[in-house]
Image (cartoon, rainbow, N blue to C red; front, side, top):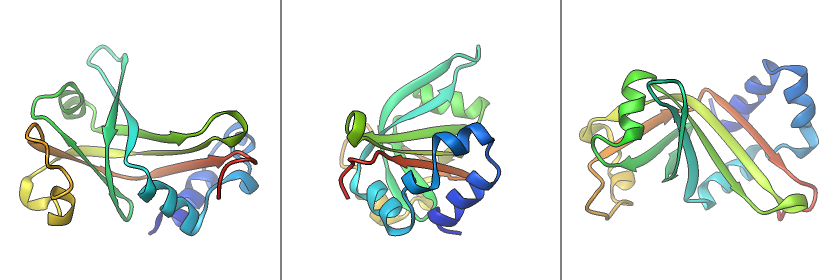
Length: 151
């Protein structure tokens, strides 16, 4: 399944309120959705703290199909949160007001053993602090592009 199919499935199961907030004519689809996510390098990842409060932090990512790879440090708050509740929301956005674009990706997420990380993905992180890669397997995708957004 590709991102476009996943987004269609997400909206098919969404509430009427969500479908109104993300009307079909404003959604990114097909190549535009993939191109947008591949052009961007950073988003905000959210996970759940032990007491249920949200934890949000900027994260870099690399997308391969419907899998999003995010470098982190071993023992980070995000990794510890995911050990308890293995679900992550990644929000990728740009622009303001009538020119904004957003994609929201949700799914199970876990620390991946090094041999599981594709070599081309691992090569994108040259920083010494990267000791763990998180693997987010998208199960839900929502997107919106305001009327004045580029592209």
